[in-house]
Length: 249
Length: 261
Ligand SMILES: Nc1ncnc2c1ncn2[C@@H]1O[C@H](COP(=O)(O)OP(=O)(O)OP(=O)(O)O)[C@@H](O)[C@H]1O
Ligand SMILES: [Mg+2]
Image 1 (cartoon, chains in turn yellow, blue):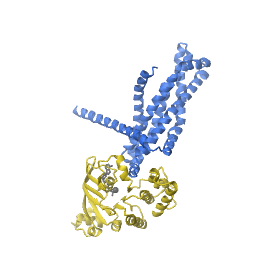
Image 2 (tube, protein in one colour):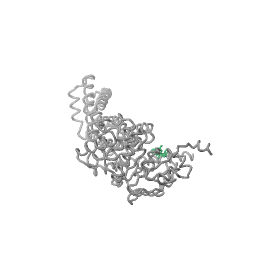
Image 3 (cartoon, helix red, strand yellow):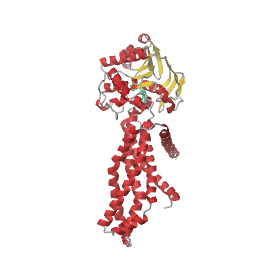
Image 4 (cartoon, helix red, strand yellow):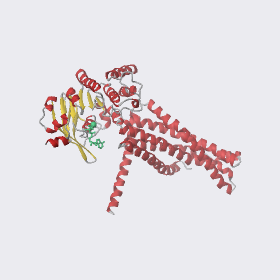
């Protein structure tokens, strides 16, 4: 259970989050949509405990993580997997050591089991046999899939996906969407997916929330969002630019 | 006028803030040193890149400092017919000041820059956040191995710099400037004491921490893409060098009270 109340964050005096209220139930799949630069990644980083808000409460399983110092966040973080927008692979390590990172660091498994689990998650993201490549040798979409493999290998209870399908071809995007669904259905992983991609949002979202001007503007089932009377929502999901909306009157 | 005071005030605050962040990093690193499990792999890699790969530049600068200092001492001692005093002058100056300072400054330039650039790049590409998201403290994974490696390597590098400096100083003094070799060595043995060597090594041990914490702080606080990484790198080198030179004076004065020269 993730509960966010009145979350606020400014950077150098410019407000980005202006009182976000949001609750995500266990094993729910929530999709967050919103324009570029509206603060989706910033919101996700708060949930991962990577940023401290200026104000507000952020409870994970009933515990407010905002006042916790870095060291005390670690036990909570072990249960949260993050796929970063830019994948954030360690470029000094090869694919194997990137994917195995958390298992090696936390001594979570024996070397033989680590090798098996790496092979397993690489197969899941369609990157089998690429263990010895360096991140610099991979394309953007491949890096993203390695980033996903790295996030899921420790079997987190909560997964945060920052634009999992951007930069992927439609078929690969589809298989990543299926993977998100599978993790959620088979392992009851709580999933928060940030995306621009409305196909993906419709496919994986049990609920969709739209972030606009630093607040959650609406939240509802994909169907409710589709039929929302709000013009801002309609323009966003239909991809109508502000200029065109203004021309139409 | 008021503006001037405001500027001055803001500058002071920034400076205090800066010192605070370096101090926080220092205390975090020492805390991690005792609480974390040792990371042999990362530490050995760092000993290699900090210690072993700095060897050529340290030996080269040590040799040339020894040579030039030998020549300069000879020029002055020769005026008062004390040519053979060149030996102890070279060995003591090298052990106490020249080798420690030159080696530390070379390491600040080579290693401090690399630390700030590597960690800064990781910061702007979200790799630091990725570490944190996987419940790994950047201080433990990145800073502590570098700290151990530099605190281990810098005294050894300095000792090698002293040795090669004395040797090349001897060559210049005796082979080029024709000082009597036997007396050169004799005077050097008599006047150079153990404490001349270990005060120099104590000093660089302290400088090692200045370089690692200032440089890692620059990297970890780096902001603003490639430009930010460039800025952090420059700052790391400049600030560690200044810190070394300032600290050197005070530590020297302090050590002279504890171990009279
Ligand atoms: N560390 C930071 N320092 C200063 N400003 C920041 C920082 N991180 C984000 N911002 C600002 O916050 C705003 C929201 O950024 P964010 O990355 O969350 O957008 P986003 O909704 O994820 O956009 P996109 O869809 O393009 O990824 C932007 O205006 C950005 O400039
Ligand atoms: Mg984003």
